[in-house]
Length: 337
Image (cartoon, rainbow, N blue to C red):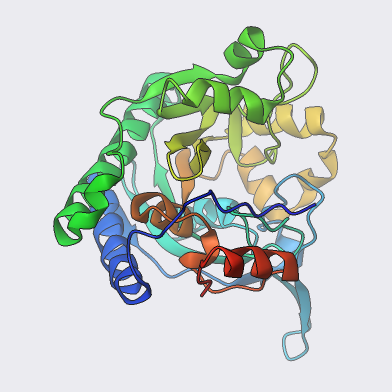
């Protein structure tokens, strides 16, 4: 079944050359604004990590990493899925203090990703992580951080609209963030799928932080998968917007307050991953040696799609696509990079 759908009558707001200019401006603007808002410093990040360290993100636990051997080092390497755990280790190794954080360009390969308007094998994010105090491990702190990120998006959008006036025809990001839990959505629409619940909520709440991702709801099923060893499932969420081009809920960011030793212990047991307790990263965390942190990933191509009014992620990043997608985009006049 064709999973790429170009809306009827869709025409990009910017031509190919202006799109490239806008992408460059957007990325420079947003990362500087985000760094200022959250007190983050830029660091370099790995494209691959050692398989034996447990640092790679296993996402939902079924995705296969791209692996290769490094003969000169005698080790097995994995291309990162994300930097969720690497960032926390970096804060520990670089001796960051409470209130300080880092951000980086994350480039990943997710070979098992299904291809559609929003997903490709190549994933690019601003990955960020910040050291927090024990008193900050609460929902109020999480909410304030989410609001700071939303404000950084607004400021970036306002500057883009000044540089490219045609973008004024796209809706401006809502002034207020709506906070709701996955359980509240299930209680309200028990017969809908998780994605259908998101769509129903976002129609009336176009900027939403959906909290409580990863743990089982009353139905016995989680709203969505989340690895057990980085986010605390009770203090995390997804930043969602209503995408007017696609008429759908649209995820910009996944983030949360990270597990402390007690949360990691609990979530490893619940998820059936007790074997990870012997990995170097997990040993340090369970021993209380890693700093308490909050962090997340903000999709670079996702933000470009949203702020530039694009219908397909291939309009803002170069990738590999199946023939059905190529044909659908070509027939709609959509140029894929």
